Length: 199
Image (cartoon, rainbow, N blue to C red; front, side, top):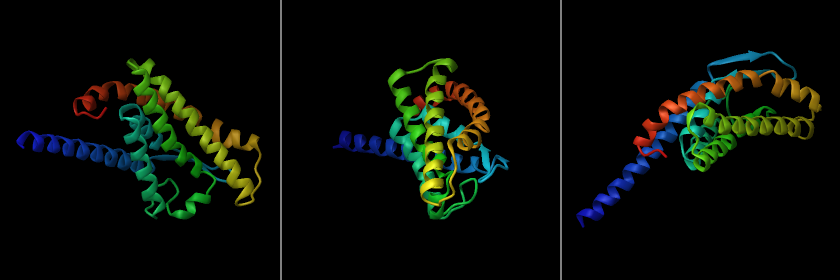
């Protein structure tokens, strides 16, 4: 009976640890929205934020389920109306063309975590492969969503040339530099989180 109780307690501890990690990365991603540089482009300004850095860390450090859950928690909080996105919050954000980048956060976090689980990368170079794949997923999601919402929902037609310049070329270099920074940070933090049973 005592052993069985001990197993239940250990399982509960693991669940509490996982919930804490999800909450931590959701909160860090929310905080990252307020560390931003705004690029005044038309029809919508673009933001370079620290959100992507914390999404990278979630993807590189957590297992796939936890990584995506942490970002989905952040998205749910924002869509409920808490102003945790770079330009506010609320359900109306769904028809904002740039919302695709926020959806890309969740997809990229899962893809990076899955690749880390599959490849077990070591060192900064090893971590860069999942990070760059996550970057590609993040930008692809953002650009496709921008095109579809602009052209078929809010009826503000925009071509792929404008999307490529505004939604990719204007911000991708700083985001790639964040990939390098996050890869280095993940190498240092990985052993700590593994010691806590995070992966």
